[in-house]
Image: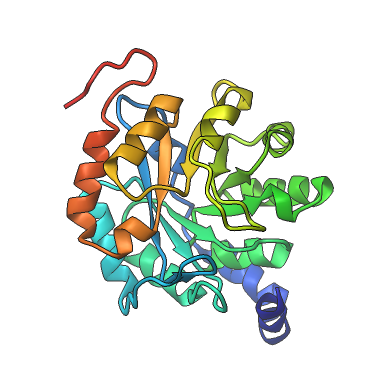
Amino acid sequence: MEDAADRERTRPLKDVEAAAAARPPARDALAALAPAGHVKIIAEVKRASPSRGHLAAIPDPALQARRYETGGASVVSVLTEGRRFKGSLADLESVHDAVGIPVLRKDFIATDYQVLEARAAGADLVLLIVAALDQPTLERLHALTLDLGMTPLVEAHSADEVDRAAEVGARLIGVNARDLSTFELDADLFGRLVDRIPDGVVKVAESAVLAPADVTHYRRAGADAVLIGEALVTGDPVATLADFLEAGAFDPRDGRQYA
């Protein structure tokens, strides 16, 4: 939040609004992540995290994103928080210009200014973390994101938070397996909460994905999409994506396998 406040002091809101308005229409993330006979993957450009520390240098985030697109990712997620995740809005802009699939701004979004600067940098989606926002703020930022033509990915960590995401009309709800306070992982959390997500909403499982079996686990639980970071930045992203997509190539409703 301190970095966002610094940016707001140096770049007036009217300039950000103008830059956001000048952007071409956002790419359709809901269409990209729509339920299908195989899992969709949101592949993350992620240099570091508070729980894992340094992961990868990623000197060229655009190249990393192009590899994700080549490997079959449906959306690219870009960490733009600088202090703990070593990301930036410049990363987001370079990724957006390098790929043809939707791009998610992943950050601790809490103000209208941050939503506007996301669109100005080319974001097609914005992460809204329920735990970090009171309900009126969540409603306002969700509405603003939609007004700008982007898609909100509303992230929950509990049953109450899933209900709050549904209350604002979220069409894309993620369940994050990582506890924000302890950083502990619970790979079964998605499965316990998925039935609370309304019909017609795209269901995203986040975190605790290091191997193909983890994708299979989430797919069996009903995930339409899986967000993956660490496993893709610490190995060959194209080969890893191929393995993960194969592991999630079945319909969770009937177990039917897809080639």
